[in-house]
Image (cartoon, rainbow, N blue to C red; front, side, top):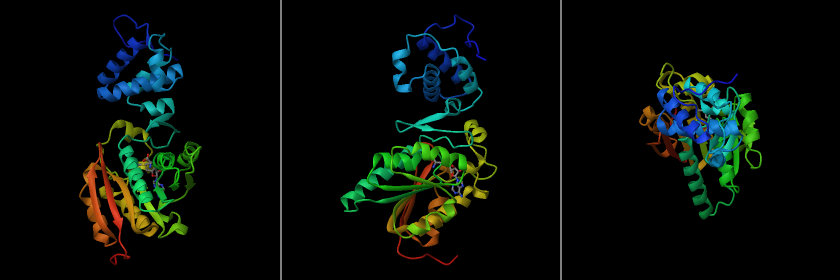
Length: 299
Ligand SMILES: C[S@@+](CC[C@H](N)C(=O)[O-])C[C@H]1O[C@@H](n2cnc3c(N)ncnc32)[C@H](O)[C@@H]1O
């Protein structure tokens, strides 16, 4: 079933005019203007079967029949990536499936940081650094790092079957190896040898409903909720990262903007890290910590 153009005025006859109207409709539904424009382009590109980058060549063309159905679904706050079945992250297409977390723009900051650190390791003489992505979802960080740094050996682990399936597909053409498993027991064979751990674990405190409806209603609960205070999985990832990393190895951990103090405090309190500090990202926060020599304080 297709839906008619949401206008009291003339029905737009070109895709360019329809895009403007779609943006208006999405803004009226409470979506910020920049996001509304990006989403309208993603939906329109899907409707005319081109990539968003190639959409400009279609703007004088007719309005695809499905566009208004997609726009109405988006106006009801279904994420655009769920409607089209894929997300664009750092210029690459990531397949999705129901129950698989949608990559978020702030995670790109962590990938950029990881890539810079890997280049630093090359300069320090480490030819083929070892990277582990804990809680890999659709392969967002593992695949992006493997694409940008083909010399790195990149492993990702993810618990949800549906996410593992799409992550393996998304890793196609890269050397990233994605496995299914619990990040808490990840890769015992790599203990003490890993140069860089990246992770975006679940970190929302139970009951905190400040995330957008797109996240709360469509991202899978396994990707979001992390007990009281939201630190349950972060605590577990601290243990796993400290086990995997060599002394001097680094963990980059995404967390909530409301955890800028609690997360570095948690890491510092274990005695296993030489430096632990968090900074805000465009939407959330990111901890950087350097693995020390010792096994830490007794719990
Ligand atoms: C916030 S999402 C992040 C996904 C991806 N890293 C990204 O940044 O787009 C958290 C992911 O952790 C996975 N997860 C939750 N608990 C896990 C566990 N114990 N072991 C492995 N993965 C887990 C969820 O299924 C979800 O895909």
